[in-house]
Length: 107
Length: 121
Image (tube, rainbow over all chains, first blue to last red; front, side):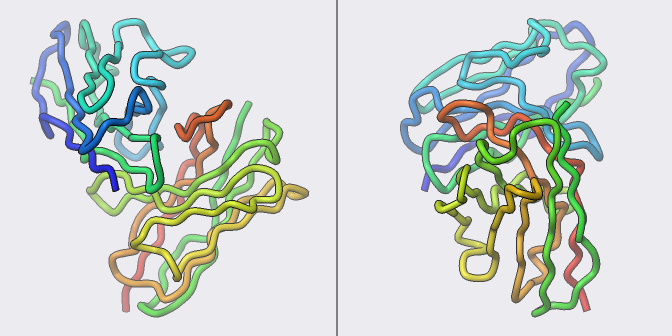
């Protein structure tokens, strides 16, 4: 089974900051990685799939990169609505797996 | 507009059973694989089960639920179901149904609001 390790698990940042979240896979998954945003009490929202392709309607300040075993989600200029928890997900093989999440909070 | 509405959650005793339903609308339900994902209180996301499009002949399960949970779909009604047996305290979670993104992919582009399952005596 493929495991995903996200870092950091918690991130404190200010509006306007550039933030980067890393997701490492236990084995190579090519670009079969998705990123989700989840706000408290809400369902997750798909931001990026495959690894670097923004889904329709997602602001361009979000970007994804990487392939193989190391991936990044970058927010170029953090906005108030971006404070949330972010999850990566490998979709390369069953069982599907999510990373542990990165909570982005206001400094 | 895609809509997924889960129902059927509630309080159940350990060892009990519960069936969750997900009513889909706004898209051609039969041509999309579907999935269940859960989230224990204060915890991260956990994939539970997926079912293929069409007749739903391919079903996959997380090891944590294999042999206890059964996923199914009724294309005529546009509904997805998750039958949960032999429930344990660790099954307590919000259960989301989600739709696969179009194309040969397993990312999930639309989610329901979730239904809470609490397993407790």
